[in-house]
Structures are given as structure tokens and as C-alpha cells.
Length: 326
Image (cartoon, rainbow, N blue to C red; front, side, top):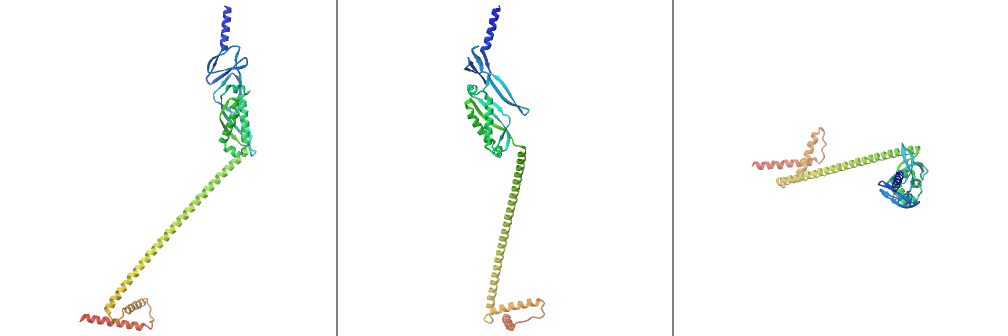
């Protein structure tokens, strides 16, 4: 019975040593007598006890708790094949214009070749951390502070390309790199805030000046158009007035011409029609002078000839009336 129990115990131990269960998304490297032999996939796997043994791997991963970074170290045979987030602690770098800033980044990577990740580098996580920090320090050293603050996408893309090339021999794929925080010194932050405030005030002043300029231009254009329209209206009014005056003069001339023609027909050869018209205008002028309230009226010497013309007109008209009576 004792021998049977011993055999059963040995069988259980051998089975436990020969069966390896691997979770989905993980893998285990098997070494036979210290040399790489195989890679176990997800599920239940069998190995040769006492000859095969899983390779133990040391992982050192930084994590942040309560805004403080701490490292978790583990020694495990399981290698995670999923994409992993690597949150780096904050580090101090110096820009091209000699400004010291604090910056931290987060990196997303994935192990594609497990044998390279285990056998080509001693500590993969520490290697990724150090090469990321040194590369980030070199990139920031080539940029000034303003460029660093405004070129995050450029820094991320350059950092990803450089890290992806550097970690390719380790069987690692760098999928993405993101800068989390960039913290300039307190005095630099105060100066930047003042500069931003000054820039906003400058833009506000420029916009206000542009608005006033546009308003003045529009007002001047309005005044110009108003004056042009007033001038055009005045010109059209003067043209119409001149046309009306010309038409009136034309009609008056036609009326006077018609009256002279009628007078010539009525007077015949006894009197010139033009003398009659002049005498008539002279009488109208004397009438206006008399109505003005003047007690003394100076008559020109030629008035006697004009009066003679009036007497002739009277005789002619008297003869016409006599002829009509007869």
C-alpha cells in the first residue's frame, strides 16, 4: 500500500510538472536544459518534467498612484502579448533656449517577437523606459519653449518613429507615444500668462481699430454717395429749370412774334410794328415806376419821340374804330 501511495504521489507530481496552462493573450517560453526549446500558446500544454522548464522573466513596471510614481517588480514566466501602456514618471529636460521644464509621457507598445524580447535584452521594461527618456530629452533640446508647447503632435510622431526603430531588434512594436504634461517653471508660466494677456489685448485693440476703420470708411462712402446724389439731383433740377425757362422764353418769343405779325397786318404801312412794341414796353416801365412811390421821375430826352409814337398809335387805332363804325 505504501508503495502504491508513493507511486500515486509521484504520478501527481509528474503530471503537475508536465501540464502548463496558459491564459489567452499570454505565452511562456520553455527551455530544455537551459536552451530555448519551444513557445507555449494559450490553453493546456505538456512539457517534459525535469528536462523542460519555463523561462522566468523579470518585469519592472512604473505605475502612478495618488499622483506619485512607484515601481512594481515581478518575476514570472508569463509574457503578455497584448498592447501595454507604459506610464513614465516625470523628468526634467532643458529646451534649446535654456528653459528647464518638467515633462512626462505615456507609451503604448506590444511584444511581437517573444524570443527577441527575452533573449536580446536583459530588462525590456527598463530598456524601453530609459530609451524613451533619453530620446525625449534629445528632441526637447532641439526645440525652443514656444515650439515645445505648440508642437506636441510633431514631438509625438518623431518620438514614435525613433523608438519604433530602436526597439525593433527587441521584437517590440511602438504603437503610440503621447506627451501628458509639460510644466514650465513658475516664473515662466507667469511671463507666458502676461504675454498671452498682452496678445489678447493687442488683438482686441486691432479688431476695435479695424472696426472703427471700416465704420469710418462706410460712413465716408455714405456721405460721398449722398453728396453725389444731391449733386445729381441739383443738376437735374437745374437742367429741368433751364429747359422750362427756355421753353417759356421760346413760347413768349413765339407769342410776341405772333402779336407783331397781327399788329403788322392791322397797322399796315401806317406804323412799324417794332415801334409799337417798344412804345408798349416803355409805357409798362413808366407804370412800374409810378407804382413804386416815386414823386419825381426823370424822363430821357428821347421820351418825346416815344410819346410821338404813342400819338401815332392813338391816331391809327382811332381810324380803325371809325372805319368799323362806318
